Amino acid sequence: AAAAAAAGAASGGDPGADTPMSPGFSAYLAPDDDAGSQDGGESVSPGSAAAGAAVAVAEACRVVRLLLKDGGGHTKELALRAKVMTAHANSMAGDGHATPTELFKAVLRWIEKALALLEDLSVDEQPAAATACTELAVALLGLLCTWLHECPMAVQSLLQQTENLFLVHV
Image 1 (cartoon, helix red, strand yellow):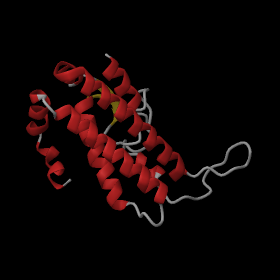
Image 2 (cartoon, helix red, strand yellow):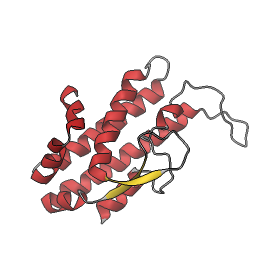
Image 3 (cartoon, one colour):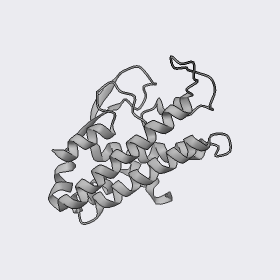
Image 4 (cartoon, one colour):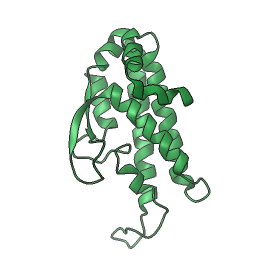
């Protein structure tokens, strides 16, 4: 239950939330510009907001990783049943459509999206976003490694889906 609660935090919490790895996340990684302001007139760029969100999700991944590590094989098997709300694969940012998805499958999709975003980001033009996306990808991969370690059910779930072959290139 604790892993599921932490997983909910990692996914953005509420069903309509635009999570850092939802299809709309890449829109936030636009080059820093004056696309928003706070009451004090300070500019808040979408890229810096996304970087902060990615770092927060990376930290949530670390918490879930510790729960899985300390909980052992039974906890890992129970966590395979946990569900999180994720945006539809073909929906665009902000439409609010989300469906429950198994946390394990969501982690795999988020890894794939984080790695794809890393390929598209320019470290020179968007250093904060690139660093945050790298941190997120590392945290997600660490979570996956911990989950797979000594958990045959997780390994079986990973190997059953051909769309997980992207991990061969990581």
